[in-house]
Image: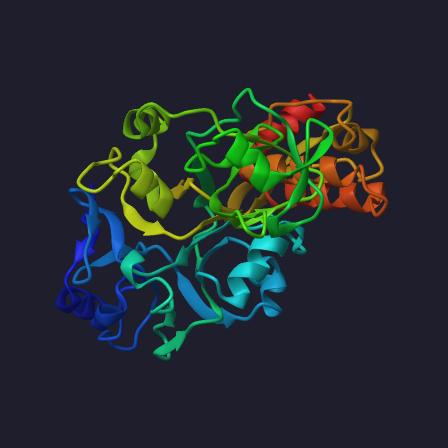
Length: 328
Length: 91
């Protein structure tokens, strides 16, 4: 297993030696890094070399292999993000980092499935966050190392050119599946919902969740033609009778509350592909999985990476591990 | 179903598949849920899932949606998973 957690001095040396890097770390360590071929996002939670870890001192490093022929780094705003798939050329893979709750994050979450060229090029990434104790006090940030700019609103994207014989494949591990409960259909796209249709009847969703004593640590799950796509609960506002989510819900899609999970780590490891994990170049997992499954100190197989406020495998996902393999 | 497979030598070996036009009925069958295939490639599944929901709205345009789905096959046809998916689709 390749080492992923490094000190600031280690990372400075890698940058100065010309390495192409994807980085994740706390703001106070990322802000010390020199100019170079790297992008980064803020987060102090990781699955590191020895398992789940909170650190504001170490940086999580994904070093792009020497066969990466070229990279380009760009910052997109909420409007220009819609061209992201068109900006990724043949034989290239895109890595995107979006600051949580930024305009670019919200826009990408809602609109990326409809971007022109969706799915025509590999795109993977994550949503930068902060120490949970600093929520509301510190803003998540992304970094363009090529000109040492820091962004609270824009999305930073690194596009890596691969040799033609290399195959980049973005995939996910989601241990959640639709439970056997009610069918939930939202009346509008968005991050909040009041009235919804439950089994065809209009009801207030906040009232429903409270009355049914639903465990909101478990996400809503939609079935996208055999792919389970989660939407995580953020809060129930009893006064406003409104429910908020960490990702948008989409009008007309049938959601169900996820079935219970007995042991996250065991079920997660059972879903790790039996072959090809040595070909994983990058992966990240969700902060809610880290928290609810108490991953600190626990290993999730050989899969490492930042713990994030949202994951990108072509589109925004929640409570899901996303990973990129490169093979011949 | 017609699916012509031929090889192109252009420094490296690539498999090029002739994927039927968006007017071919198979795309409509997939999008309208008349045919179900266990595809492997993630964006194909995500897109069909989304477009099947969209197909129930007034704004749905079958030709446009079929082209959107077909483009994912075309642009990724060098990937083994997509080659498997094309075989599942066209035999």
